[in-house]
Amino acid sequence: MKIQVTEYLVIDLEHENWECRCCGHRLISARENYKKGALIHARDPRQIHRPLIDATKFAYTFAPDPALCVIYEFYCPNCGTMLETEYQVPGHMPVHDIEFDIDALKAQWAKRGGVATPDMGPDIDFMPDRHLHHHRH
Ligand SMILES: [Zn+2]
Image (cartoon, rainbow, N blue to C red; front, side, top):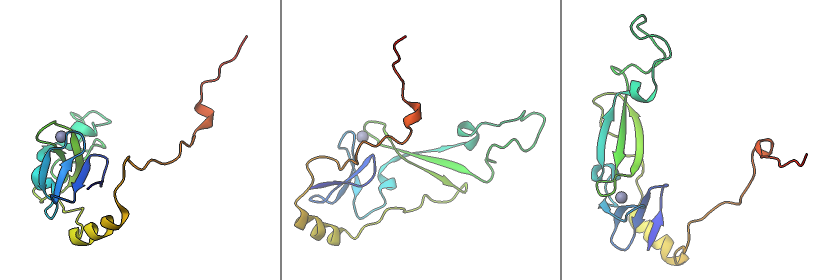
């Protein structure tokens, strides 16, 4: 049985693996940090949050200081889907942010019997004013 954990991460409970939701690639044991099974790219935060003022004239530009912040991007090594991102102190190890008791998870899902389709919420219109109105003139 496979259960969806995040938008791009799935756990295969039968084989106890993290998998990419897009291509099914086995990343690593579900008892490990899934990030160890992904490709990592340490990005300069200024590439994501560009300076708002001229960086040649000012030391502080409202962009994150790369001496204090790095953005880790984690990718599926098979299909290249970005699985997760993490803001971190440069040189710090990625955090182990999702850790399940796999034995308890298996027991819990054995009683449920699995999910055929992703659990989707109702189709709610949060911004009704942004609808396109079709007027006849
Ligand atoms: Zn993939």
